[in-house]
Length: 248
Image: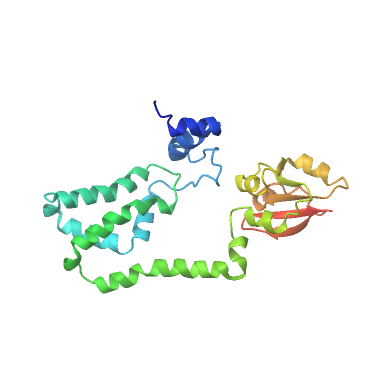
């Protein structure tokens, strides 16, 4: 009996899976930074080639040290199959993403193992190793400090891109929840599909009625729609880019 491929089962149980996950996430995301199918946020539009800056920053200072060492030892490197393999492994990911505008800094993580192996290979020949270790600890320490600051006074909620905290902390589930414009995927997920999109005109009509409701509006939308009068609405909660309002 022939086994049914996993992606066929996924498509059967979640129609549109192949188009979204296989085609969208693996091809459209790479070639089109404005791809509209991104359900988990927004396309991360970046300048071409910025992946190299991500590499130099996240692997500081080891990647700089080994590049200098490899260049000085280039005549021997081409004769060493192990170093050629590691160098190809290291360069493949940044080269692959050089022509893509849709990426984030974590995309360079696959190159960390070859960097570590090359550092190990040249360890006895590297200079200023103690300084290298100290410098390499700066980024992790800053990340840990940022994490701790984020845990204080719920700063993650205030500076988060997701609508999770707005809905969990400020939405009264007994009242209808709306989203001005195209609703975000996170608002759909954390409201269990109860959030509904409203146009500007529909919101104006809602504010003429007596029925209470809550609505999420992005700060960007308000800046664009300066003629929209939201005086009847009161702010209940704030995130990095959105606010949740109540109408009573």
